[in-house]
Length: 395
Image (cartoon, rainbow, N blue to C red; front, side):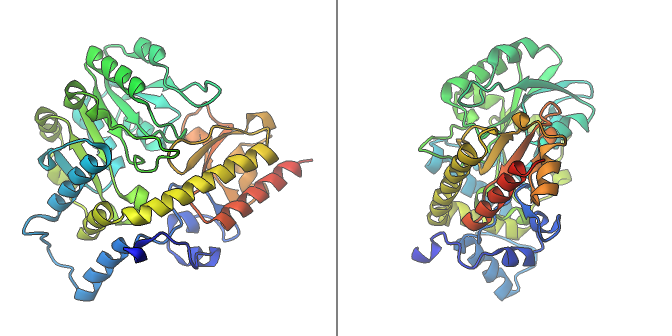
């Protein structure tokens, strides 16, 4: 539909500050927030319409969708989306619809490991991955991603050496947050081989799988082979790509019936609850009707990414950054600036720009920070200009 095209009309700082959002309300009004992974764009019209439809009808009671529980509508939309977008055929019955993927990370650790067991993961990594292991009494086995001069890569040899008998799970984040990598088939096949050799369950967070640049293609880990699928739990959601995180809805897919049974033997589905029907309706609308809007959003994000990389290369050449292949997040290495404080503190105090601190993703990355470029071009340009002035103005 023509009116579902992506647009940025009337999105100013003043408009964003009127929202009751975590992103724009955590800091003082003069701070430009480029931290939490939330977009500043108007929501897709198809999502807005389903929200308005429920409000207009006062439809707030116990719900059905097509004569079934609302969660089944999300499961069916997920299955259709996976086949249409990635050529991956799944059974809606093998899914669980939950409130958010962090919830699924914690539940998976509890379901598939015991206290004292270990969970492997590529680092740096989205902080809740670490929290889900540490806060449940398990041990993190870090597999650092080296920079090969062009991008961050998985060191499969290092991972293999770290996979002792105590490692029960592999946490996979693909596309990777914060480095922006899209793992290629050869990389995924190597991980699948290691998982089979070491009898690991793989928890694959693929929430950024739509936000892929330069014609690359996301490959769901469970689609690599039947063997890989049998040991994979896939996590995804429409909320990241379509900008409605506050509506709370995610999908967990189990690659085998036995895997789902093992999960539910320890984590009864009732303990996880179910999303409100607004989150489910938004998810179904996004995955079935939101592609025209998303195509425009993706073009805007890629343009912002290119502008960010060009500005850093021209005006902050000391800062190392690899162009993200996916996500709307850039992983910036400020080590060469030799700052007397962390980059997070420096840019918050001197530029009034809020980034995400690198140490949250890996204690070894104190001199890094993550920047969210999912905003308007004027806001991004102002934030970058402030950062450049702050660096050049050091005494």
